[in-house]
Length: 199
Length: 156
Image (cartoon, each protein chain N blue to C red):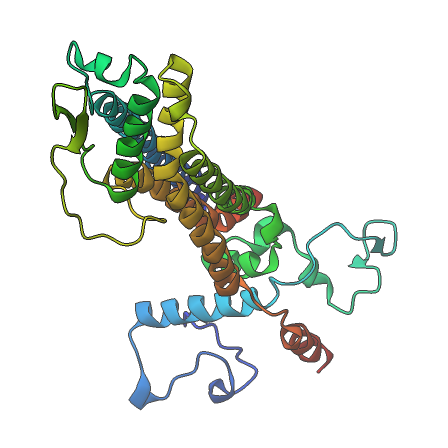
């Protein structure tokens, strides 16, 4: 059969995939792209299946089909990872499947520590500066030690409030970040896949 | 497939460089801002030292025990400048009569409309605060892109 769509000659083409009526015929290249897209979509449906090594139940002689123990899926669903993730659609499905917990994000951990330290440190530093100003040691003598002490008092007086503000905004930003990235676990997706193969 | 795999490390390097450059710029701004703040504080200290000077002979007006009064006035000038954000005020010693009476007057006093002397924005701190904000922003960018980078690493 020379037709690129490869209709099965045993059945009528109207009831086979890829058949287009005369009024709706489209160019060959466009049809190939559509078929390729449809094929990728079908392949991405099996992407969320388990890819981790699982106990294998089979004939043991290497000839029979090998299926993960207890898995309801057919043998072709246990294809290699390379085959499953060979295109962009499968990659997106993998992105959803791979677990990237937020508590393992080193940037978030750093920001959380910085936020708390900046807030507490800023408030403490400002309290120290205020104590130094209103119970000042400057009147005790114009020595070099007093001058150095007052240099740091002024620096703390100026920068401590903004440290506390930056820390508070960091903590608030973390809350907003967690709120925007939080996704509830979708059980209906897994159930839908089970139903599809059970049918 | 190969293009996707080859582009992943390149994008990771680009992502790292952007975060690194932003973080480094923020760190430089913080260091420069702290330097500006310290130089301003040092200048205020020097100005407080110069806020009042006894001319030769005037020290005798107070019986030669003017150190405590001098330190008190310098301290007052420093705190006033620090809390109100004004220039450091200066004082002038004037002899009132031949019997040793004298007065100390503030030479000039700027009227500043400001909030109560509590937490307020010191202009010279803006540079350091901008640097700190840049560093924190770079960390947030890194956090937002970390998941994608983590997934790319797993895929490769």
